[in-house]
Length: 144
Image 1: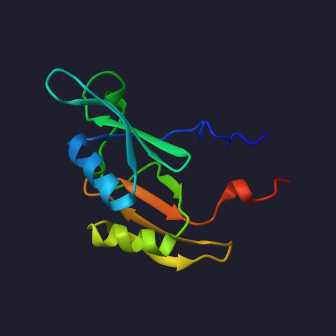
Image 2: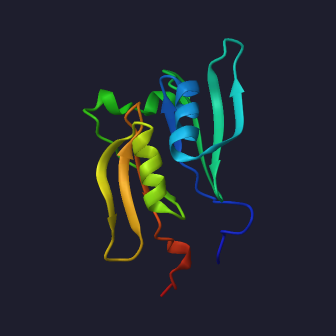
Image 3: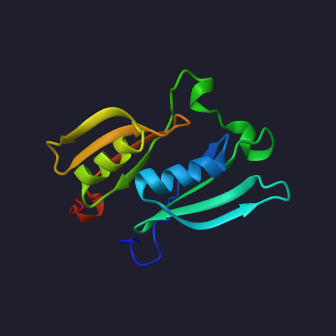
């Protein structure tokens, strides 16, 4: 069953940032995300935000030592390591790479054409989270 219909993805990565407002601005500028919703508490802290890109979405908020946040570590707390990475399909991967690089993304894996089709690159945002961007679209691959 193809769930890619107009409703978007049913799997949405969630991230936490020490300065979610700065992260939102940077992710929109560098990666082309658009704000879908941003919910703040009475102190202006981002409790929950939704950014969209094409048919996909990421959710994020400020780091919190309570609730669900107590189960999440920031990359700088664990020597820059991550246990997961958001993968985003982009139409023009080379242009996306250039945009991200110009905005100051730390390139971890340079842009390259891939043997399995498409192209891709990996980078970190200013707060250390790992991202993969590529033109390979697994929704277009015939299933076995």
